Image 1 (cartoon, helix red, strand yellow):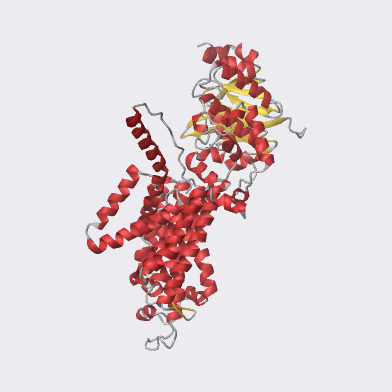
Image 2 (cartoon, each protein chain N blue to C red):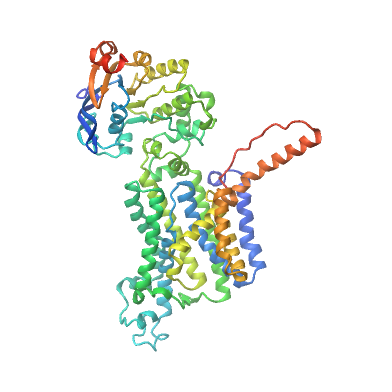
Length: 248
Length: 383
């Protein structure tokens, strides 16, 4: 990483309004390298919208999003992905008719153009990479299973695995443990800690215990704005945060 | 070579099905049918080109175009313009006030060949145009629409509007295009009489050969990563986009490819039928092309070709006997397909083993009076 940019992602004064309603307003966010940065906040606080803005799904009306010093506003989604930002959706978004292996393979970054797709060959390098990622997400014995019949938690992991195939520098996870059992949550926390060793992770989450386990830094959002930011300990003792969110 | 074979055919069954179909078209039908009927088969097969395009575009990628007749027509008109110019030499047309131009231009008081007709004096240019014109136009339309995320019903409506615009445009410019009558009275290609029986046989075999080459190419695409990405786009567009694929570009490519092979079909139609008119490229024929594909199986390359043959045979047979009933029958067939077997005739092949298994289980139960274990057969839609 270039030392000129200690932060992988620098978001300043980001805002978006839908017909006058400001979903995100004056949002500042700095993602440090190899950090797990969790965004929490009540429903409708604008957390998912922030992810949408970063990955280009929603176009910002003001502010800037800089990834390693390059402006991302106005860049097409697939180019943002290719630059190195991967995103997991709130509901597991995988290819149900394909096997786990094929899901992973399709996410491999070689040959994403039309010609590249036609020329694509299943090489040993790619096979090994799929196997490695499958082992990381605990699906090594499910490679030939059709993704549609995986459990909910396994689908969530598979989608994280699909992101890992792209080897992005920033991974954004929208409620990765929603609908998971306690044991699955623990495993997911371990997984997130592990993948953040060589990349930065943004997580949106509700489960406070889970956040406590994974977060290096926490940003609390409320009504489109930042309410508090800092370590989990600092944030959870903030009277404003307790009032709008945790205290309930 | 074995690798290529493996990419095209996923299993032996598919290769046998292809072989059997080729045997039917190349040996059995030419021996069994008089040349008039064989020529009709050739005409139906020219729709098969469009159907293959729809398998990729609609079946695999989930983009329904109700305007494929446009590209069929563009290719057909390119071919027809060349043939018409060759049929309009100064000697044959000496009786006209301006000899050497197509007859319909003369009737419309046009005294000089319009500029855009000039290059169609050349056969190599014409052949190139048959491929390039539909592909380029589809690329422009596709790029403009897919970039703006136009899809689904809206895309279908827009393509339908384009079909209407083109057929009206041709209709309204009689002097330039032959208007509603189309371009008729086509005779020779580089001096070779395309109306003779001999020529009709040759054109038929050429048509089958090119069609199956395209069919293999389409199967190749389906079984490469591009084929898997197409299905992925159909089922989970956003995930594909956020895996770093340029979804708009991939859709545009498939649309342009489908248009290119449709144009080729149009050219074979003109060569075998001997005329081209706006009634073949408007809304109704464009929808019919979708019906052929749906009946045969929109996921299956062979199925779609078969659909063109069966529906058109039905059309010829029934409309000769009961002209009034035909439309109801075709409409009914389409509804039945959509409601009961959405993957068309080719989809029934997937059902067959399941039914057989069920029947076997049932009979076993009756015979031995033991409960049958439930079995499931994975569906294959790769044929």
